[in-house]
Image (cartoon, rainbow, N blue to C red):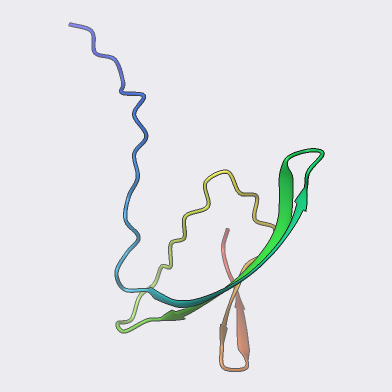
Length: 78
């Protein structure tokens, strides 16, 4: 018996331990190449301790990410 993998897209929900509360987005479109550059700042609430924060980033190239808590900044693993 031969089985084929489904070509159906699979979407998963993000963990519920990290709750976004505000997004600040800045986009700079390039209409010649149909691409864009941008920045995103996401304010989150973390009601329970967690070791991992997961974000959807399909078809995005992320150059830099960090987690800021009060005045302390922590580099994120991309």
